[in-house]
Amino acid sequence: MLKTFPNDISLKRIRAEALVDGYVINHINKDGYKIIEKSSLDFFESIVNDEENRTASDIKFLARYYMWMSDDDPKLRQQAFDLFEWGKKLYPNEWMFDFHIAAYYNQFGMPGQALPYIQEAIRKAPWREIAYDDCGRIYSNLGDIAKAQEMQNKAKEIKTIKDKLYAEAKRV
Image (tube, rainbow, N blue to C red; front, side):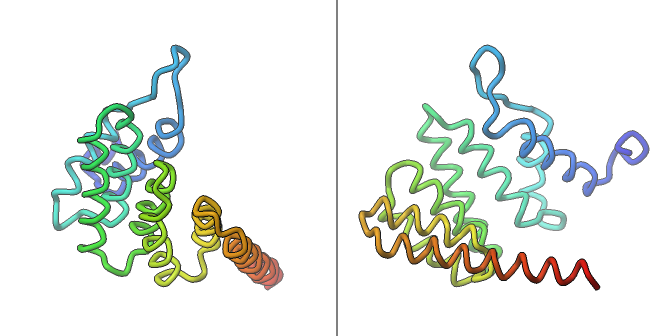
């Protein structure tokens, strides 16, 4: 399809997102190196500066890509955090920026910094069980096991409700 419509931004976005999620982030090559796929990186680095065509998801993907590449590069890691914060300013109702900031702070051993972000993600998207699940991990890392269990239970409760709704919708 891209050969037929080589300038179609939607098709380029779908391709770049599929590559990043399916083949780049959390994937290592046979020699033990992180996979970096240049065309998707180029797409996201370009599109985030295009005010007319950029989406919140484009900023999120680029920030996640930078985090993936930032192992020994604190400057690149900070760029990723800056992108997430910029995304929050441009798209204040998007829960994913807060969610990812929280997840990365927690991953880097800073659960205290993660907590207000995950709480904000939950406030913006209370139907996202993954946010409660991550909140539980953050509380666990903070040593608050009771609150961690409460969040895990809330995540399970939401998932159960969604599963019932999906089952009912299939019957319609």
